[in-house]
Length: 355
Image 1 (cartoon, one colour):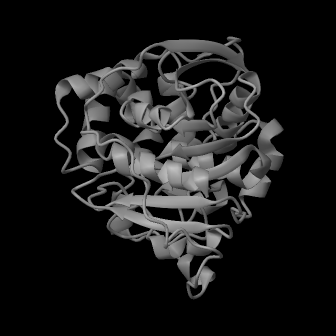
Image 2 (image 1 turned 90 degrees about the vertical axis):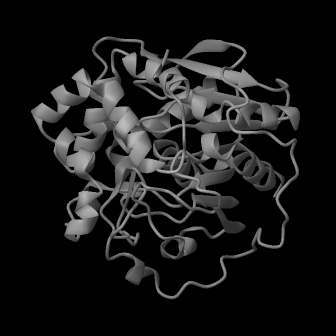
């Protein structure tokens, strides 16, 4: 689940699941919220073929490619010469969050790439001595390396949880590579300094798993019970989503990756300043700690029943200076928005790609 930096208002009842841990008082720094440049608000959502969530259960095939320090496993759909879209999952999820979104976008002519992040599924490190690092800039760098390997110069990037944060970072630091962005729960860039800020008790409670992971008991517990732990997170984060065991198990298989626990634990410990990052990414982290404004066209989304902690939309509106709008997706939609509401997610991607 996600966590942001100092600009964000941290709602006491919930916030974004992948790690935006420290921004309770930051909404005040934003000032009053005005119109953010040109808007998508007058644009009706694109009309794509109707799809019932859960219609698809698998991708046609998986591919592997060396990219940066990884051999990345990914699904691909649509024409090879179509406009590129990259879909990014979070924790504890995987590429199956987009199993209904990808064919919708492919049917509209997009080349859709859905990678397993480091520590998930069939993605593997190329060298045994590469640090199993989960800090925010590293995950974003992985995706830029994947784009290079696939010869994708520019893509629309969309994601939720860790994936939304990664999309934010690419849009902020490599805007020339990002045509537009769809981000569930808005602006999720964080910093270790922001992670030091204590929250009110009810807000801290929402991050219980982060503090559990800070202990060796937590690391061992997640390793031993990773499937049960992840199912609990699914239930808490999407309280109205009646997923079945088969749906969960298809994703849970990706947590058997040999590096999964190390990456997850490092990710959350790094946020709290309890684990060091890789010094070669220090410059990127310094830039991110300034909470840069995102200039590319953006649509942010939020489910009306997100049980994970997330920032209120008003707290991040001014972090987007390009064409921008926010959509709340109704119908009991929780944290895993693309899997719970694939049509709404795909429509947002098409709209921002066309914008």
